Length: 125
Image (cartoon, rainbow, N blue to C red):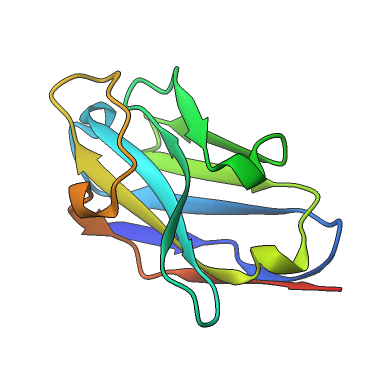
């Protein structure tokens, strides 16, 4: 249902853009989230976007560095990650949560029914 891509190895200060292609519909009724799980850490919410795409929300330590967006016509969600730090190293997952309204924010991992396979982001110092 979800296919994430775009991970890789980058130096600190560099940028990556992750993509997540979905086969869900109506796609505009799915709030999308990006999560990550670093080595020895629990999975955590990183960024999210409502189905309508007009509301985005972020984990505090990525605000100003990460930007989430979506193209509902292409059923794809993106996260642009700039000024990457070694602590951003993790396996990144996209996830989808069906919402009755297109303007609902979702952050809890338990609320996301669909998950992508994960894409590895490694930031070297």
